[in-house]
Structure formats: structure tokens, C-alpha cells
Amino acid sequence: MTAAAAELRVDGVTVRFAGLTALDEVSFTVAPGSIHALIGPNGAGKSTCFNVLSGVYRATEGSVHYDGRELTGLAPHRIAGIGVARTFQNIVLTAGTVADNLMLGRHGLTTAGFASTALRLPKAVREQRRHRERAYEIADFLGIAAHFEQPVGPLSYGDRKRVEIARALCMEPRLLLLDEPVAGMNPTERLAMAATIAAVRAELGISILIVEHDMGMVMRLADAVTVLDFGRRIADGTPESVQRDPAVIAAYLGQQQEQQKEESA
Amino acid sequence: MSEISKRAVAGVGVLVLLALPFYATGFWLQSGLFAMAAVIGAIGLSLLTGTTGQLSLGHAFFLAVGAYGYVWLSGPAGAADGLTGLGLPPLLAFGLAVALTGLAGGLLSPIAGRLRGMYLGVATLALVFIGQHVMLNAHTVTGGYNGRSVPPMDLFGFALADASPQGLLVLGVPFGGLERLWYFGLALVALALLTARNLLRGRPGRALGAVRDSEVAAAVMGVPVARYRSAAFVVSCLYAGAGGALLALVFRRVVPETFGLVLSIDYLAMIVIGGLGSVGGAAAAAVLVTLLPQVLTGYADDLPLLARAGSGAAGPTPGEAARYLYGAAIVLVLTLAPQGLAGLTRRRPRKTLQEHTP
Image (cartoon, rainbow over the protein chains, first blue to last red):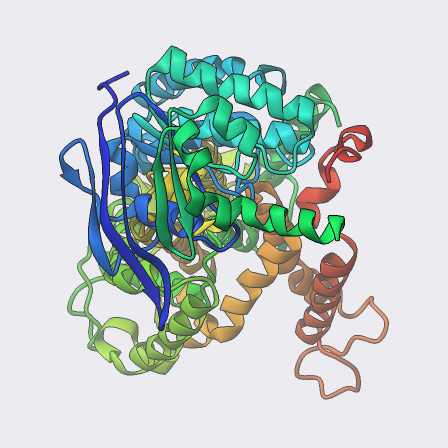
């Protein structure tokens, strides 16, 4: 680890797409070393928020600060350089082996250029070997070391999710953004993934911001929860307080109550 | 194929290539050298289009920059026909011609970095026409419509040209210009193959592949997308420059007609037939696409249905027939083997693993 985790401050971020307000003055703070969950019904703006944090979208208004540095307006690769890594909701891996993908995560930490790589200069060869060892360690930590040399294409869905997280960890981030890490998994896989996420925080001491639909997992894992609905923040606090919040129940669990009413009627 | 048998095949191939000048006729050596130039150029385009996902229709232009660059840099200054040149030693001129082509690509890098895929293809299409105009009209440099002759390669006073006054004999075989140029070409091809393979297996290659597969994911992983797109363009131009300069040495005369849009399309055909993104595949297909018309021309009399070029007889000329054949090859590749020649040699992925994919 090069530097300790720092505070992420999201301040009044608004994102508009041609008249549609995807995020409306959203503010929250992720404490250093915490697991912070971002939840909300479909279309609440969670993924938009992730895209703003990683520099893929630009905020119309508001600002994002990490470790005292303003991220708003920075290109994605610069934000990556500051130590913010992310995964995608629908797995986005590149063709090649697991090792190739993990080594892509080391891109910002390595320096070999076109000339030194093409000519296989000793410096470039040494660098690649050293970083490959670290990538293998991270693969081992995520439980995918057995697939290290295999192409990613034929791997199981759960393993590919793990490759994505391992690739993000290969960037040695201080803040990890996980977009629905257990979506599409069965209960056993979900439990294993939750354990992995907890282990990542415990071992590496980094902050994790997680978008997730699985409420049980959010309540178990998260230190703090921010709830979005229609692009607005409707609640923010500990999992217990958020769970009791009437606005959250109306937006999130209200649908279930209505269903129950319909069923009993 | 196992790793050992692959190596054995490659070793035998190298030996055959090294021994060829002792047995093959001038026609075959010339065709082979022509194919070598194409291999180098195709590797460059493969890195740009196959690996990075950026289309270029301007490859013929950069081959021309390499070819004319070499001729101008090594050509004699102040000749009677009004042609200019710097009169540099051929090897230096060759290196500088490659650098010049890279520079030409670099000048285009603001465009090459910003435009994606198809759009870059349309933008680079213009280069071919600009190139034709310049080649036809910059008379003192290019020699205009009739082109200009190419100074032969010369390595440390050892001329790689025909009609050598020493009358060099190696193992009883007269070693003329083609034979010597053959080894120069082989060395260049080996260098091109090795550097491209190293690039693909290293940090730049992974970044370029990421840019092709997902621009957003690449950027989020810390890859400056525009800079890598530009870099891929410049690298592909360097290979095109080397290929073009070698082409000039083989032709011994450069004319604008060679470097038209058809040449760009030929190179695209090579990398599609070879399998996008595969250096070895692109090289193999480059050999196939360049040798086919040569072979058909050489054996036009013995083949049915073929008319000799310019004879006025019914039937396709060898050049046309070759185009039909590799047009058919592209269709076959796209429908039956989307991975191209490279895909045919690769081991199939294990089916048992694939079944788990949702």
C-alpha cells in the first residue's frame, strides 16, 4: 500500500442528461476504511453516481473530493492514478487470460513503454515479472489463482466477477467502488463474496463503496448506508437507522407492503 | 499442435527460408521479397486494426511515405532530370525513412487519438487521395507519373544489388542483388515479428487490447485512451514505413500507381484473412495475398481459364483472378472461420468449461 485510505466527499452532485435529472444534489461522505453502501430502487441513480466518481460522466453541478483533491472534471485515468478503482455491473473484461486482465490493472503502477517492451529491455522484463507475482498474489487472495493462466471467456460467471474485483485490486486502490458484486449469484456464492469483501477491507484497510440490491448483505456488511430514490438522497446513516427510516420504507420496502396488502385482500 | 511440434515446424520453416536463395529462381525470390514487405506492413495494420480496433484505409499512403522517403533520402542530389535527393548511405536512409513515416503518423495523431474505429477509417481514406496528388505533382521529389528509380541497398560497402562487379559466388551459386536483399528482408521480417509479439505480450499490448474491448474500462484502469490510440497509429506507421521502403527496394522503381486505394484494401484483406489481432495470422495472410497474383501470373499459361495480361484473350487476367480468389477467401473466413488463419491453428477451448457460461 502506498498511502492510507482517505475520505471521499460527494457534495451536491447533480447530473442532467438532456432534461432528465439522473442525480439531484446528492451528498454523502465515505469515511476512510469503511464499507459504505449505496442503495435504492432501479433507476435511482446509483450507477450514474459511480460513473461520476470514476470520471466516466461529468457532474453538471457539485463536486467530488478524495483525499483533499477534486475529482470532478478529471479524466478517468487520472482518477485511477489517485487510487480509485471500480468494477462494472455487467462484467467488462478484455480478451486474454486472467493474468492479462490483472496485469491491465497494474497499468498505472508500471512504466514500460512501446520501445522498451518491443525490444524486451531487461528493465521491462523485470518489471513485468515483479508485477505478475503481485497479480498472482491478488488472484490467490480472491480464490482464482487456479485460473491465472486460463482465458477469461470460459470462466464461470462468479469467477469472472472475481477477476474483475481482482483486476481493480491490482491497481492497489485506496477506494474500491463495487457495482453490484453479487448480482446474479446463488446464495452460497453471495455468502462467499460477502466474506471476500469483508476480507479485502480487513486485510488491505481500504474504503469500499458498494452498490447492491441484496439488502441482507448490505445490512451485514456496511458501516454506513446512503439511499437514493429518483436521483435524490432520501436517507443516510447506519444500516439500523436507515432500515427504520419511513422515507426508505416507503420508497424501497413500500412496494412489498402494498403487495402484502394485495395478497391479504 | 503441441508447443514442441510448433517449434519444430517454425525451425524447419526458418531453415527453408535461409536456404531458398541457393535453389529458387529470381522470380520466386522477387515474389518472396514482395511478400516480406507485405508481411511487415500487415503486422503494422494488425496492431492498429486488430489489436486496437482502429480502422485505417490510409495504409497505402504510409507505405508510400516509406518508399518515397527511402528513395529521396538515398537518391543522388542534383541529377540531370531535375530530381532532388540527399544522397545518404542506403541503410541510414532506410532507417530515416521509417522514422519519417512514424513522424507522418504522429502529425495525424490528434485525429487518430480522437476518432474511433470506422470514423478513423473514413478520415484516413482522404490520405490516399492526398498522397496520390502529391506523388503525381511533387515532381522533384517523386518523379511524378513515371516515378523514380530506387538506389540499391548497400550494407557497409557490400552492395545488395544486381550485376555486382565482384561476381560473388557463394557455394557455387551466383549471389546477385536479389539473393542478398533476401537476407536483408528476412532480418527485417524477423525483427517486425519479434517486436510486434513483444509489444502484444507486454504492457502496451494489454492497454491497446483494453481500448479495443472497452474504452470505458480501459480508461478506468488508468489507460489514457487517446494517447494509446495515437501511439498505436504511429507504431503501425513505423511498420508501414519499413514495409514501403522494402517494397521500393524490391520494385527498384517507385510509381504512384502502386500506392492507390486498392493497396490499402489489400492490407485490410490480409489482416481479416489472417484473423484480427493475430500477428502470425496477418503475416501468413500477407504471404498468401501477395503470392497469389504472382504465382497466377507466373503460371498463367499452364492454368485453365486464365488469360495472359494484355493478350486480349477471353477470361480473367491473373491479377483479376487473384482478386476473385481472395475475395472468396474473405467471404469464407468471415462465414466459416471468423478467427481467420490464426484461429485454424489454435486449440479449441475446452467444451466442458464453456458449458458453465451463462
